[in-house]
Length: 197
Image (cartoon, rainbow, N blue to C red; front, side, top):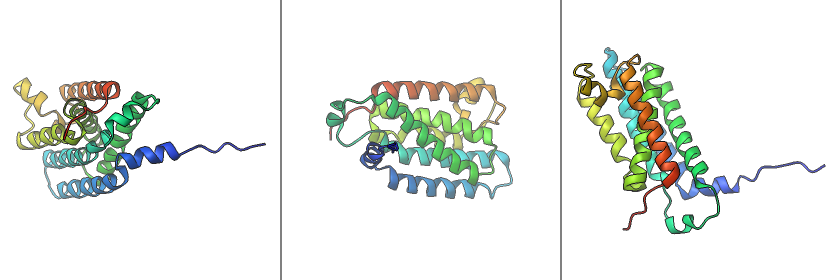
C-alpha cells in the first residue's frame, strides 16, 4: 500500500516568495525585546503600552509579506487566494501574539485583543495602500495609543486608545474585533493593492 506524503513544495515556495523566514526572525526578536523592556515598569498601563508597541512592530515587519513581488504573475495562478491570504494573516498574527504573550507581563486578554485589531489594521493597509505600506496603520495606531493615556472618558478616547485599554473594556474589544474582521475580509477578498514603482 502506497503511503501518502503531503506535498509541501507550494507552501515552501509561497513562504519564500513572501520573504517570510527572514522577516519572522526579525519580527520575533523585535517583539520579544520591546515586550521585555516593558516588563521593567511597575505600572500596569506601561506594560500594556510596551506590549502593544511590540505587536505593532512585529506586524509592521511581517506586513510586507502580505503581497508578493510579482503581482501580475500571481493573478494568473489558478489557486484560491482567499484561503491562502486568510491562513497567512492568521499565522502571522498567531506567531506575533505567541512571542508577545511569552515575553510580556501584560494580561493575555490585552495581548490577544491588540493582536487581533492590529492584524486587521495591517491587512487593511495592505489591501488599500499595498503590502509595502502595510506597516503604516499598525505602527502608527500603536504609537498613537502609546502616547495618549488610556482614558475612559470621553468615549471617543476609549475607542481611539483601544489597544492599551484594560482587558475588561468592552468598547476596546468591540473596536478590535471590528478591525480584525473588516481587515481580514477585505484582504482575503482583494489581496494586496498593486502599486507601481
